[in-house]
Length: 244
Length: 307
Image: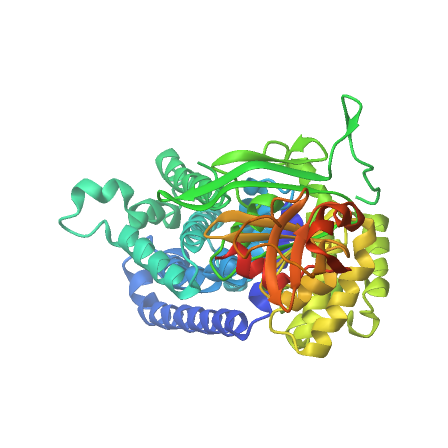
């Protein structure tokens, strides 16, 4: 049943104009960013060669583009996932789920996987751009793999947070606003003056992946927040069904 | 669930399809529903009647398993609904708003609802085809639900509720927002499916109740205030030559009479629970001139219950 719910969720997202327009706009923006970085890279390439700089295409083009992509995902995931549960509540369809024999956690996992799957085209396009770039030059494959693992974990976490906030609201836009607020707050926790909270900083945990480092602490950070958000969503739906 | 449960046998007795006992739902200290009992048998169409906010939707949510009670229990075929989620296979629910995905076709919505209730493969396609045929959805099955008329969407939503052949069908305001022709069509449809299951419907439209229900339960402020059979003979119009003193209570003191309303010119409307012929000898002293079994008027029941 998880697969059925996930498939329906993907169809629900891409049956709307918002879904396609968001994906297309994100893709265009990322392509433009990549080309801008590439242009800068070509300009400074003679200097890099002259100074024997260890920096290459991966450091100066791919990593900055993937970093921008993560910020774009902060905007995109709540936009596409805001209605996931809020719309089910508003339309009365949630009652249908709650009165069925389906366990609540399966509903939550189905919705979450659906949102993840809906984001995959963007991640694949990013990967395709990097691979095409790699055809004409040498890219650091290990570093690229680590960066995509980071983006994937980040997508999983943002989708789980969006789902949780969607379960707390009947209005999809309110859910999106709360998700944006929370994700940007986590993003900004590395700002000066927020040192005591920097353990929770999203940017601090994502940056090592983009630099090619896969650290246990970062893995634990993303997996813990994702699992906690999914657990809280399940609990929230259980409460909506009258659980005391 | 393509089979029909015949009712489970407990200690030699057949358990009702649904039995709710002492149901209560309290939110933030205030009771949305209290002290609610109900028994449903196969073939019955029972109406929940009440003004807006009387607790009808809460009762339906509790009885469908969508909401857990604060107190009391709901048993479906003798098994606790909230403790055994698998029992929910026996229930089909139509919430107040048709729970269809607008971006899916009728057929896809039916498949989704069927899967949600455990149907797979051939059983699912057979059930879907049966629903399309039974509810006359043939010309619309590949149409997006966003493009259906209100009446057609309601019909598709009922097909969704019925796809797993539930023993209990729960309908919340099924004819609300429909034009008279669509409402009548929907009533015919409910009548068609009702012999195979028990139907519980909530509405504040008296016409629905009078045309469909064999029994109604009146709710007011979260409590059951009346329960009345609507079968013919559940009330009597009598004419008395020498009626008793008004307000003496003689008529309501008769065996099986639960309420009496004076209608003028010697006529009285009695709400009864016994066969009419058994009452005649008791009224001889008041010169019984006419005794006409009649269907109890819901308007009278509501007026009495909500007094």
